[in-house]
Image 1: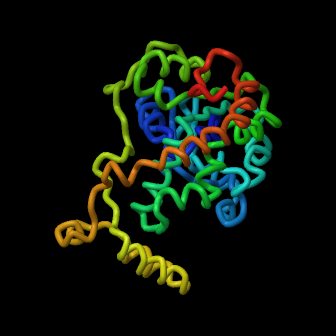
Image 2 (image 1 turned 135 degrees about the vertical axis):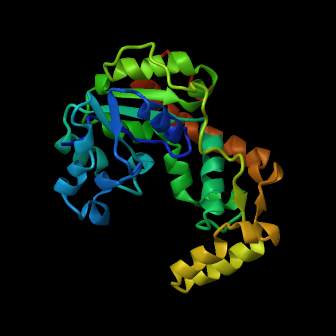
Length: 280
């Protein structure tokens, strides 16, 4: 039994908040594993379609079964995802969460750094790290899905709208899924998986972790960078400072200019109503 809809991303654009909210709906079921990444192919799909569809069997009595995997909108790092999706669920509904692109990049970097996977300072990472940039090219990402799914199957939702206008935004999502608008979760204003409370390791510890990773010792590298209460007491992990989460103005302006062409493509896909952060 396959899913009936996908939340495809973008990473750090409130996919967790929407996933958690929709879990409360009596006519929606999600697989227990939020990010199965099955449609990425390769090792992620090695368990086969029977395993994947078995994740959604407990939801056979409800109208919708969903999966949320932000990596589904990380082309060209992961290719062929929309084609696999339509081959599996040709009638699927697609929900694509977006966020102000530069702010999304910064949050993406913070998450990668906090997890011990990123060791470069912010300005260096977002300039030279293609995953940060391409994940914010929403026009490029959505166009891949628009090539295989009809426009009525695609819904773009700004994370800022989910935070500022949760009720009307949830009604858009519910309507897209063919569910009655007006349903509300216990806490419609919830906001999960933000930077609040997240900790990072200081640069010397990240450097050691990076050396271990370069030597092929991935498990040891992650262990060194892992955040624990003991490391926090010892000062080996700490909260992000405001300065760490700000880009130099010239880099931020240059990135915004780079996004303008992509956002013109996004505008052609979503129409005139959605506010695209002044970029199109």
